[in-house]
Image 1 (tube, one colour):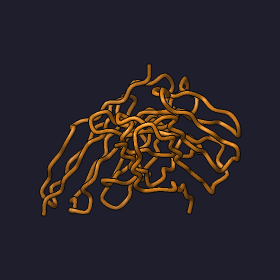
Image 2 (cartoon, one colour; image 1 turned 90 degrees about the horizontal axis):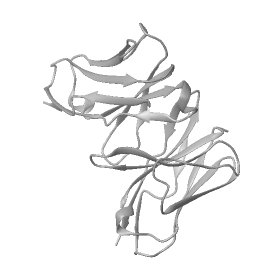
Image 3 (cartoon, rainbow over the protein chains, first blue to last red; image 1 turned 30 degrees about the horizontal axis):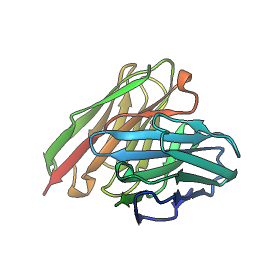
Image 4 (cartoon, rainbow over the protein chains, first blue to last red; image 1 turned 90 degrees about the vertical axis):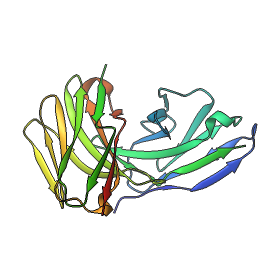
Length: 110
Length: 111
């Protein structure tokens, strides 16, 4: 079975901290995505990557960056965490259009 | 611009009471339409992919259908364990590999 693993289910960080969210897929997929999900706003695309070392901005990239040094790993970085980045973060990999999602990371910034 | 809407926003059913969820879409060249199920605090779980109008897919109590403008997720004789948020998403020719998600329908099935 295909698998996307996010390193943390729950995370609490302080305002101003640099935060790393890790995502690993075992399917050799080229495309990977980071979304955040908030009540009433649905899924919003932050960044995506089509290949190693390639990245593209999504709809809400401000305050975030990404890293993809290896095909299987796609990291989301919050350069200086703020309270408005408290959210559920979802990583996904893609083949033939369809996504496989990780279980999500619930991040709280205090 | 590709768009996806879903209705109703929330649906409350008695156990055994069949119903349908709607996904309406506007897309330039549909390459695929996806249905996902999401339980609270978890990532979405893939249910179906539909590629062309007239196509139907079934899985247990769920059946997804597709027309040129909308998709329906029919739930037959639902059980409490079917309670979840159901997300619809479209993959269009002009969006490269980005998939556009609808806002979801929150389904509650009461015993």
